Image 1: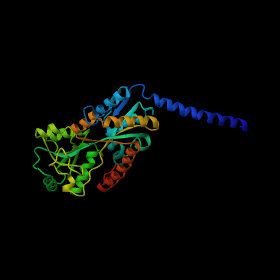
Image 2 (image 1 turned 90 degrees about the horizontal axis):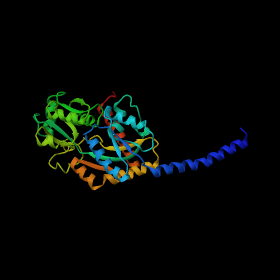
Image 3 (image 1 turned 45 degrees about the vertical axis):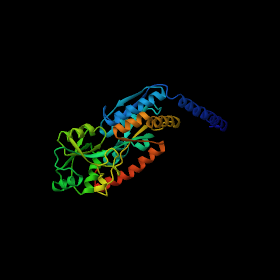
Image 4 (image 1 turned 180 degrees about the horizontal axis):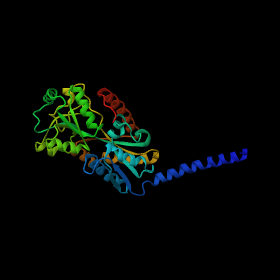
Length: 328
C-alpha cells in the first residue's frame, strides 16, 4: 500500500473514532427511550420475582419507561442467564439473578454454558435474604442439638429438601452436615418453594431456606424454625439461635442477588442503571418491603458486586473441595 494511502486511512480512522465515541455518548444520554425487559431466574410468585417486580416498579416510574418482567426459571438460573448473555448490550435486556448462578454453578456443573465474569456486566447487588433451618412439625426435635443427635442416630435417614444440585441451600445443607459430622439425605427440587411445601406436608424432614414467606407455615405449626444461618441472630427472631452458636465452625454459603447486563454494556448505561437501582432500593417503599419480606438491602457500585463475585467464588471453591462435591 502506498505510504500516502496509509496516512490517509489512518487520518480517517483518527477522525472517525471521536465521532463513534460521541455517537455512543448520545445514545447513552437518550437511554432509555423504550421498554426494558428484566429477565428473572425465579418463577412468578417466588421471592426473587416479587422483589424484582417491587424494585423495577419504582425504577420504571423514575426512568419513565415500562420495565417488563420476564420469568425464565429452570436449570439453577442457566436459562435466564443464557438469554441475557445473547442479548444486545444496549441496556434493554437485564438480568435479576443469584449467587448460585453467578458463583456456584462453575464448581458443581461439569459444563456451564457461560462465564459470569466474562459474559455479563455487573450493575449492582440487590438484596440478601435471611435464611433459616426449618423442620417438619412431626419431627421429634425442638432444638438444633436434638436434630444433630437424631441425625447421628439415623445416618443417611434424615432428609433435607433443597433446590437442585449446587444451589445455595444444597451447599448449606452439605456444609451443615460436614460441620455437625452427620450424614443427611439431600432431596432435590426445582425450587425452594417446592422444598418448603414438602417439609410442611411432612414428606421431607427439614430444609435450609429463606425466612421470607414462611410466616403462614410457622404460625399454623406446619414447620418449626430451629436456627438461622447468618452469623448474628435476626432481629425478628431474637430467641432463635444461629447455627454457629451450636457449631462454631459453621459459616453459611454466601447468598445474595444482583442485577447484571450483557457483556460490553456501555459504562454510561451501567452508571444510569446503578444510580436508579440504588435510589429505588433505599426508598421508603423498598425498605418497608424488605422488612415485610425479611431481606437486607445491598446496593453499591458495579465494582463492589464484581468484588463480591470474586470473594464468593473463593469461598465456594474451598467449600466444594472440603465437602467433596463432584461436578454433575
